[in-house]
Image (cartoon, rainbow, N blue to C red; front, side, top):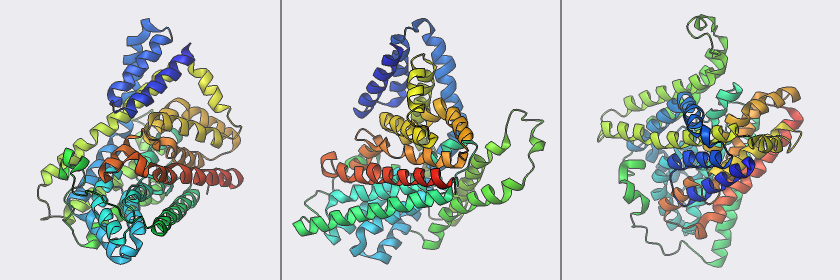
Length: 470
């Protein structure tokens, strides 16, 4: 009965999230439903306060700085004109003949530099629709192009990417954002190359059929009008010198790498033991390096943008407040996962997942994909999976002689596959921004975010199994 309760609550969570109900409310309600159906009614309140809220709070303690700084940095990049400057430069360099490549590269550069994928989508969409209209490419391919550049190789594969997905395993595996850099690069290149081949083939097919851009009312306010022009993407007409726009993005990756490989490995942490006796500093350095990199990039952006702000206070407040909903949503899902893991029926599910394959990498990939698909969130599914199974996978990997770095990369790439099923909030938001429907664009989006990343993941697992982490 407990296993049935868990499955039912997961199905309802997925269904209601797809219908638009907030996870902030769904997570505790579905957790309570699972507890009640499992026959633990008398323990429901203690489970809520001691299990759900404790897991939620621990997640907030671990990852709040990354959500906060990432959202703030993204908002400042948009409102300063830096994001638009980079996109316009790529547009001028490649021209309208390479409209698809322009959009993918613009999104990729911005997201790899630490700009939120939602901010990127809002900032790039006006440029993308103009490029596609001039090149007479079907508008339905705008959303897949943005998805390829924002939701795939820069989110999960490229080493050093400051995405929250790439930061989550650090706490559980003691790794860093550059884990398995060689395999990450291979996976990222596969996603980019196959994604571009697919989109160019769709473009060619449309041209042969004489489809063209199509008739669209591109002046509708859509989602941007509902949330306010500057709430997400800022003023798309504001620009700044290219080198100044690129500098903060370079610093995010460069400073992160400097502290990860240059400064922190040579430091002696014994002086922290007296004040923080239970802390293992070597497992925190990956997170510390990312925090320092984002702070340096934000300060630099503020300095090079002096005199360019229409309302700096408003931009800062929007960025900070914009971090609240994503982290609380994900933390609530982590709390839900902790409750599920505490139920008797979870042991059956855990054993089934762990025994999918004798190869821990395959087993881990299955677990991450399933939970990311159910929650419709790569960060949410990854967090739940690591909260409940992270210690098991680390033990299995150690016994099999598999590097935690490889475990990290496979976990992150796996969470970025089935997270983008039709009920995924990011997909729904992207389609709303682009004023497209699931019917028009989802199959091509799925090719970018599910089919091709799954192929890249399979290659990475195969190479990691044969040659280890590199």
